[in-house]
Image 1: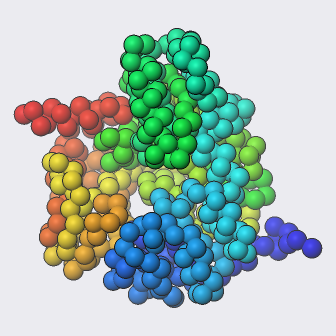
Image 2: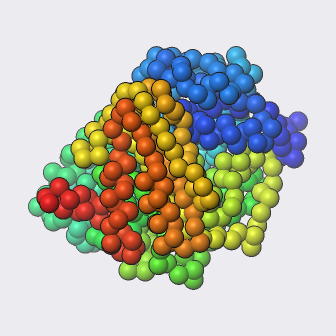
Length: 460
């Protein structure tokens, strides 16, 4: 007989962490606190990773390039079998939102610490995700919930019905790729052709969809946690509007200036959507927010880089909750238990030039990190650590928490002042300057603000 949910609770005691860097450290800590053993993996470039020394097992699975290591599904599954792991945690990036990998993990008799493959597939395709959200009553950006046809006349009609400007997006896109703004009709077909080809190369599909382009929105996120027993909660909201080239730089919780009576119905709609698709684990609903209205854009079916700001304000260990959900445990809180207090900021510290933002590889010769009440640093680096050119430039996350937004900003300024990384270039000088900006301090920014701020800064 197949095992029941009750029988499956606690059904693994060893977790393979299919990732690297700071998130590997974060997951390892959560596992240890839950009494679980960990298996760390690495590429040849990461053989000296410090988290390898604190794991119960440490296996090299391939060459430095991600395609032959961290994206090599067969190598990861083999490592799990060799190390006796009962579950795989994908972290974020790499294979974390790959439905085929989640399915392969389950077929191998292991537990995928995340949602089911079907949930990933539904929410990974932006068109099916929008359709599911509309069915659940989640507000969406104006535009059809179907893929764009090939017929030019039909495409023109859809654009006119939505109203210019519109934005063309790849159905399988993400990370800021596969999208193009169309301000007027005479450049529509050129934009369609360019985006189709970009989508084909990046995501293996030419499928596109079209939505209204909002000109001054903020980027607001809602964090959810769900179990396999029909329980789900949302843990407040985040503002991730500080972006450069669609990549987040600074995140905060809660989003400033949004009244509880405005956000609450949206949060409850997100929970309802999760229940309708049988979602399990943690996830994030991303919205554009403009003129008091929310518009769903996508759901990330994984742990987010910025999850610490929600942990700081809600008091919930999101990574532990994610693991417990995968074990089959009943969610240990209800919506009435969720209270978000104070304000939190997160700065992504990247190994990159603070002016050109080009990646900076090399050896960290000196490292000083801030400490004190309300300060948290998630990192995997140390003095002597070699930053590899093969992967994302994120080397640390600096998080602060304080009773008010103004106090949290002041705390972040001091924390940034006390952060020193030598031997490589980092974006710390850029972050220090940003936290002195008046409009940011007042919460008067949208998703385009940082790009405009950088242009003005370069011009002076």
